Length: 519
Image 1 (cartoon, rainbow, N blue to C red):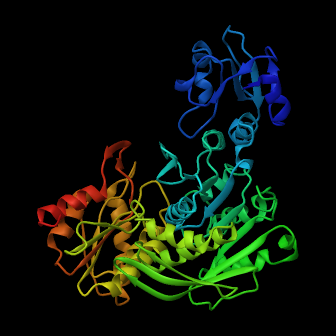
Image 2 (image 1 turned 90 degrees about the vertical axis):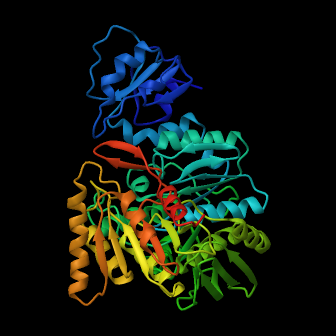
């Protein structure tokens, strides 16, 4: 617990405008529904709601103090301490860091960023550290979890206050290693700026979130902040230089390496790199490659060779070359953080799959082969289709849509990718949110038509109802066909006209398979 005076003194952007300086704060929240005796209520302005509307109600509920924007005027008659900041949202991380006593300094912190592969890499890395006997926590897209705790994840990277609260809970529960998926939003909004990282992993970069970022350059630069600003200024648990792990099979990974090998970072970071074929081998202090790579619908078999010549084998249930890249990235990070190659192999082998990431639905020995994947970018969709194409003797189907109120520029691009990579394309709804599902589908169809005009040979249909789209594809596919249901992955809901209804691609697919007699 902290007093309001301590908070104002330690968080430079906060001023104690009025009230008893010795007032003790026992909890902090920006959700007025969570306010209780001793709470500091933080009033935040958002796109839809202004938390200042709930200040008086929070005080009535027993808030010990409130933190408001500098232009707010209180009209009530209850006397409580008022803390003021120009932009309360921007200081949530710093406030949380001080209030929760910098929990990121008490555990090994590993950040994973990139367009695709963050969640799969987090699951793999968690399995590796658990195999090594290390208590591990994960904060990511699917959930926040440690030991027997499970917390639903509204954001891939939570805001700074929630993040610091979760990290404090993990540290108090004896967690030794934390794996954090770091989104571009989290970086751009400063959600992780106050953390200390021991290592950061870069997976890949392709178009996404241009509804939030003004351009691909802005999106790229947001990702780079983890390596250019936050990691170099981190203090590691071991006292060694923070570790940057880069994928050299990706253009941006190679660009990052070139930039991080300059004198600006030479004395602040340790660099580790990986590639599948070794074509982009470099002078980084540590490098590993994938040898004897075999990929099938049932997973990956690979021999990993380190720069010093040490070799070890890994077997994974995760399919696809992109997962081979993910495996190399987490193996490099784990090895550089002191994990044995035996634990790396064991952990990768024990990772049975990632929810909604090329997750097989139905019996593996009976067709059609159905996969549910979170692929919601052109690059991820292309990677998924490229993986499946050589692994089936039949027709490749893809069922997908695009989210509403998000990056409109990628819709036609995904139509192009689908038309080039699949034999049968079923275009449907994703989370249309406030937009018309038909207008979203029309934009995707524009891309399909463009690909057909340039020679793509594909059959396509549109079903606005996603359940019908999935059922139709599975019901009509041949036993030797493969179906990729893309876009929603692990999500268990669908958002239509601000109504969030239960919907799980995996459950719908399993029901359709059951109707075919495939359990």
